[in-house]
Length: 98
Image (cartoon, rainbow, N blue to C red; front, side, top):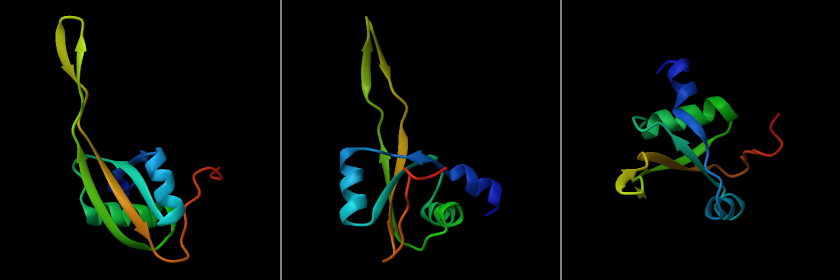
């Protein structure tokens, strides 16, 4: 896997109440990732971007919600998120990043 591909695998962090609790208690972080990314690519991308040791990666496909726009039905796009558990002593600080 080349560095250009790995740089585009992570779309961004997924910030929610659940992901905040996971990061504080379980040392697990949630990222939005490309829909064609696999676990190995996600692991290498996190190691390359944040220079941390990754313990495990879990991937989840999220189906887009169906929405009504006046008389027609529409659909939000599907997306993928990854739960990344870091090794003991490793952490990622999204707030202090410059």
